[in-house]
Length: 212
Image 1 (cartoon, rainbow, N blue to C red):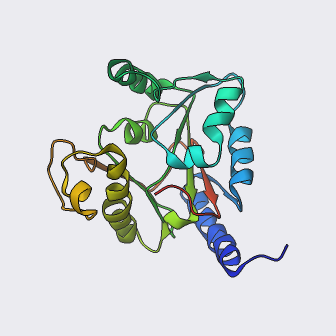
Image 2: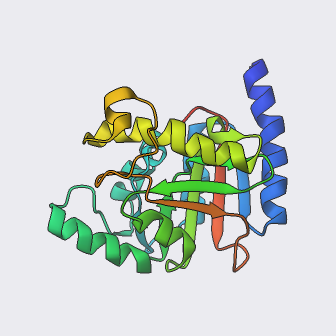
């Protein structure tokens, strides 16, 4: 089947971003479809591994959550747990073999931006789990690091906050109010510019619109 102009653009830009990420010591891949992304993710995570994750919509959209639950893995599943148990599982996730996350934004030169409220997701990306797998649709790719931070703050966070509700300005207006609310989810902004040690963070860019 002939590729659409959008698919062609994503493939070419995706190759550029993968090369930029490799120069920053990430292990990076481009997959044209969510089906290919799921296959690649499962190739990267050996059976028997202890696996945890942050609150990733993208992970669910490519079918990875379902595949992990149906596979031979030791899951630290915080999603269905009550609040007290969930906090304990989030801490345990910092010592998983593999931690799965999305990305709020990616710059064309290979830097990754994530924004967090509790900090468990950005904490795991920085240090703890032996391996991190980040999955991001090409809709997350923007030109510069400044654009990536702006996207995380003004696009990803206000949409994400609609899922959780609360009292922040973005819940009421849909627009970032640069707030300091108690239930703010823009508490930590992480820029991952180089992967250390090399290859610890594996990135799968997907040629589809995924997540927020």
